[in-house]
Image (cartoon, rainbow, N blue to C red; front, side, top):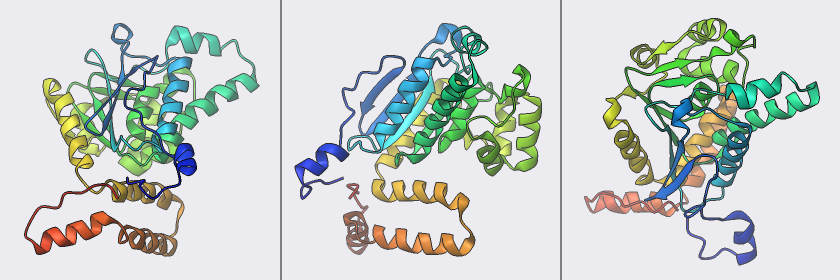
Length: 284
């Protein structure tokens, strides 16, 4: 997004770049406007820890200010997506904590989901192998999901003595796959195979495991090539309209669309159409 007329002091507090940012507890790189997050503990099927939860929360929080990232790909290393919270580094310590510290933890995990939904960049989850517990939540919280036939997604909180209402699952999952199907997964914690996940609408589509990374990157690149400011508005409205009635939603969309009509990309699309050319969007 152009900042040529932006006061430097305002830009300093509200604009940043994440190219070159070094993540400590997962992989991070920026290429051609795409931020790649790779959960990279393959020997344990990429579980989350207290550290990685907090760092993911903070990174997704910073993304709303990033000028060099216009889409995100979230994946796991070694043929698995994410096995959830690490049994030894999270689950074990949790059973020793009192209520205030437990609430600190659950609010931290919830804030990760909030930040994923609040960042304007569409998030493409590339899901292979195990996608369980908090890993399934990360997939659910993404905007688009590519999977493989061999993937196994499980909201397994019930199987470890917890409620299925974790990190927004009871509100978000029914909106993706329907109330009845979400209820089944949250009450039983059973595995959802890849083909079933696609049939239920959890996955947008299935790809071969060896093509998953390239397909996810290609989908993200297509988003980056689009009107990224308008894409961010679309994501915002998709999220905010969950809490609106139809009249509120129509008015909110009227205001949002009028804002998009002020962008250079809207004019570029018109001028390209008149010239019988393909528009080259610039995100402003």
